[in-house]
Image 1 (cartoon, rainbow, N blue to C red):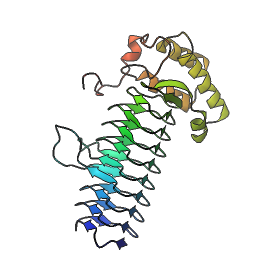
Image 2 (spheres, rainbow, N blue to C red):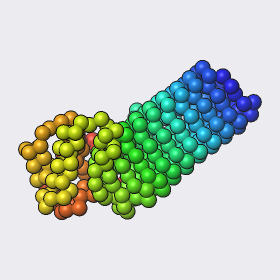
Image 3 (cartoon, rainbow, N blue to C red):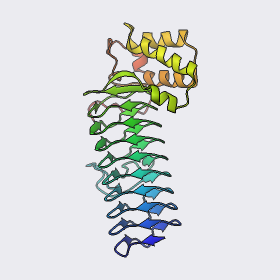
Length: 282
């Protein structure tokens, strides 16, 4: 281990093998840092924050800061971070308001400078988030997502697997998996073909998703009718079923549908699982 003499490390913190701690870094009580993780200058790790192995935290990153929430003034970190993540300069990850859920980041993610993940955010694996992206509280970013720079994501939004969001967008509604979106508000513009290849989807599955995209976003069918057509006419796969399930659970708005966005049958609107709060009025 290599610790700069100006670093402040609480005696109850647990640091793994070959951890490096830079000048003026602060590691709080009960924090856990995995093997071979590198902490740069002025990095701050909140009390109880858990960070996996082989992570790299650059200058000024703050992981486990108090949640920005009026109802939770006390500092309860609840931040759990996996392995091989990189957090560039001045990234901020806030602690959770829900001690049972936590703010959770998986493995192999890359968060660029000045990006922010609010309280109770969940980020999957292999996600790339560009500079100055702001994720509101309770946002879910699933595996393989790419988010362009200088944009905001409204609280409680979910971004599906291997979606791509263009820079300078305003994301106020769920982003379906495998889609390319941009705009203010963000709208589905096409398929993220590169993302589907990265996901390892075979040619037949990619073709089926392409046909589903045309029915859902380029036909005159409303969402419920389009999903029924997809179920009846296309060869089903795990990826296509996941897309159908994602769209069937939408609460408000319909993730960039260009055609008849409000024409969604009640049965589809009511498919949202019980216990998930509405985003209206929060």
